[in-house]
Image (cartoon, rainbow, N blue to C red):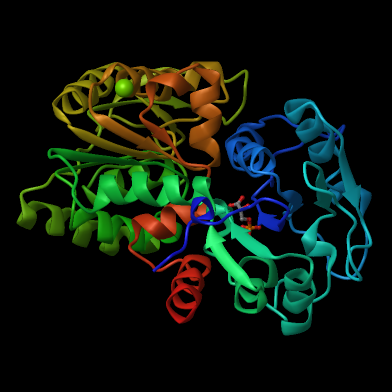
Length: 393
Ligand code: 3PG
Ligand code: MG
């Protein structure tokens, strides 16, 4: 049984909360999307209201262990947290021998991936983290697929360990969409490569009624259906796998629709001229960069019939205006749908931000890799360890 943070009396307790505050930064170190920070706020605010002393730990990016690197410092995150919470949030670089924090205060440990042993889930580092607190709260759903010292090891050594409200909400929303979905269940999976999403496509096909593929993945399916994709991004080696998935879909009475028309260009650039072409009419030097208007209409009809929608990945190069129509239309169709809609992944969140549909999606996951692994039906190690320590205590 997983214990919940709300089951504990937090008054005067020292909490170590693992959040995923791994936010995108621009070249000047400014946060470009604070969705993950905003998602963590209710957990932190609740802990403070209950009288806890709050220590937060997170990673940022993938720095080299054992050395400080300003480019990966959590200082911008500490500033943003302080702004959102309207109270000081001190960033602590040397925390391994102990941290001073009083009830009602919040401190943030510097990027945990600077610490030797984080990635290897080292016991010494895990114990040092555990020694900081009375209760360890795992709230970082987006890092729950990593078995590292701050997501996994620490839970073994902390006096008490539990799940935070964000982690619980994620597991509940994703479980609802996958375990007992209201049918028809539609999944939209975009992205550049079939190879990175092959297992998720296979496992989704066992559950969904319709599967819309987008981006480079769609190109591989177009090629597998016998059409020339010109010089589009696609994976020749994966054509047999795509054919198998098309067969698997047919046998189940599910469908993977192939685009009727596509938007092409001769080059991949912001100034490229876009051309709409039937899917069977591509020249050798054409590149598919979006779905065409007839395909948009076809997909919108599928969307209208769905009662549950799972969305991961754009269907075109939506960062460039002339190739953004497909993703924009889908984003709006999902927003307008009365279906339970669930979205996750970095590009998907960027599209949701761009088209201002966040408040019309039923649930937006903070997870990228964790979201996909959950959809695949994999056990998330940081959740599994909470389960086993919950049983023994
Ligand atoms: C993510 O952005 O998916 C999470 O923060 C995990 O980061 P990682 O892939 O570097 O472990
Ligand atoms: Mg909606």
